[in-house]
Image 1 (cartoon, chains in turn purple, brown):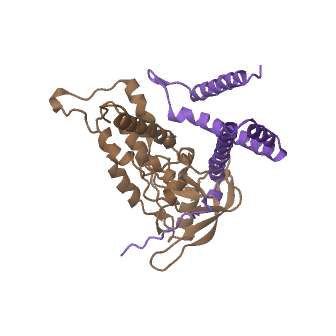
Image 2 (cartoon, chains in turn yellow, brown):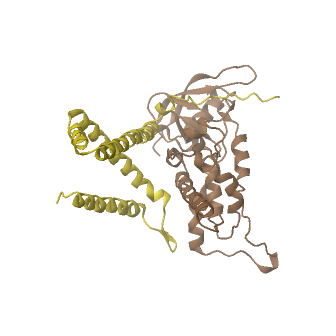
Image 3 (spheres, helix red, strand yellow):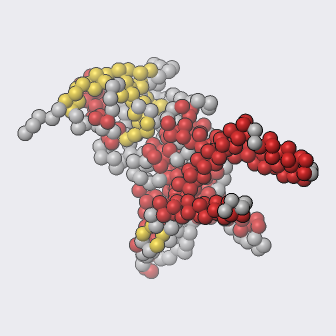
Length: 130
Length: 250
């Protein structure tokens, strides 16, 4: 008897609707679009800064427009979501073994959150917020 | 003794007969089941009382052998580990996703078996020594380093959960790569360099995009996603040492 197995293709454009976990994965991937777009914004800002005071002032005014504020808010949400999922994943990628036991995963992720908070405070301090 | 509760369970099972069918189709069964039963029990009752032509694999009925993996309501599960009481309404049972269907719920594991061989899932001693010199010793701490990754039962649920494997069949995949990691971490093993020829490639760990579904569905709590991410780190360090450190060798 010859074999005639049935091949069922994975749908290339709709597979992520099959399970909520795939949608969560895709939502994390999509955050990179916002982060990439914000990086472009920063590069444009640098270019405006190099172009002189008038160009820089124009850039700052554009940043305060309602559309720009919505865009920056979306970028912030995407960056926080991306960072949180990344920190939660660190315990899988970087386990620490002491003797026969492993350091609890939430300590490893927690250390990343703590470092994030400290670095954010340093950035805010350097920006003159305090 | 209190009699066991019974309930009528409806199952929609994917059927495919390679001798007569060109496509698969669903067939619905209604079967009286005990409340404590698992999906595998319901399938066994169907096969015994209703339809002896139904095909599926199973062996141990205790989540050890890894034979009875199926998609149950779209989720890769061991059918001996999927309690009927966890489901409401019609339970849809399909063969494991991403594998060719041999017949009904039986899939062809050939691709996985071939990939498993490629990662050399056995100890390659650092230095071979004669039996007269005794065993290769290992401390409990050295054992714990890889123990979790040695618990794989080869059930292939992780392959059915991994969209990367479904989309890119060349991907070596979660279970095989995790076993490579298990042997790489073993203090008695010296075969990492040989395995890297498969592991540190596009079809190896770099095809993984860390969806993480493999770890969520693993019935043995092996956590393949963690093994693959750790291998990405060690493979990256290899690359840096080889290409950026003067005189460095991986």
